[in-house]
Image 1: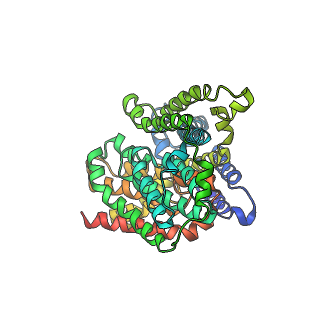
Image 2: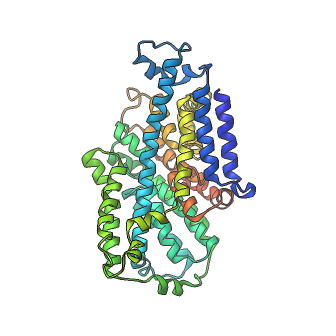
Image 3: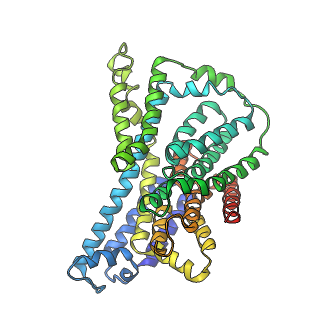
Length: 448
């Protein structure tokens, strides 16, 4: 059954990559793939894969019958328990994504971003590319790479009128956001996992990984800068159209950015998942948006409210994200990812090479279960907090997702927002991302 699930996942992945040539929407493919993978697990009567599932071993140990024999009642309970567990995790990410996208839309509706874009006076393409990338890099260490990608792509839409050029900017935003999130304990979900579980400490991860992360951005940024020269056409018209420096715009920008920045603080104080903080911020903005533009009638004012913003977010990209995570969770449930990690350990032996490969693999499957598998493979009794293995894992898992556009939450969000084709990203951005990833890894290893 493991082979069948792998075949379904592989076919789904190929169809997603060929979305435009075959004219099948990637969201539909992702949802069908996720549902079919879980259906195969539920309908499997052989249960031959159970001994390979660490999750089942733990689940069965808490029940009266803990053997790996064919036991349908325990098996059914296990499948439902796993599905419920992953649905909770996926829903928290989806709610976070929807909340962040709605906040960004609210700021945009009220002209908040035009306040920022009007301050960027440069018309030089290279200068603008460097400004946008560096802002995304440092912003993602304070927020997270997903939120940063959403915010920065929304800004670039106001500055770059040409689609092909804007997609290049979007690709660099993905690289910058993932690189910036890797060195901060709150910048990337995998770094946060290691931080919460005690494998790393905040000061040491920043000290050890920031330089490799900077190199991970600078190498592709310098390379892509060679492609472009000259000035943006239509820049003045964009400023004239979007420069609405109003009191409402200032208010919504301040509240929106404050809501996004406060999410890590909320999480640290309450220990609740980040989506609770984003929903709190969205709720506050929703209340305030109801009182803005009181002179307008109800129909006109609706477009400036959170309800209007919700209708404008790209729900298709949200559902695509849901389908992808659902598919990967099926692989994790069957122990396929854990087996992969152990096979790498047995076949290669070299931990640095294994961690590097895990970063590359994280561009294909979600980095969260891969990092979780590594946390189980390498006990803290042997690899104590702030061991170089954990820092290198944080770097590789955080930045490796940039190699493919569906390899990170930031990439998936940008893919939906800008309708970037998988193959276009593979041709235009993936080699740049690989250059940065490899360069940062070499820098980290040379410093050890």
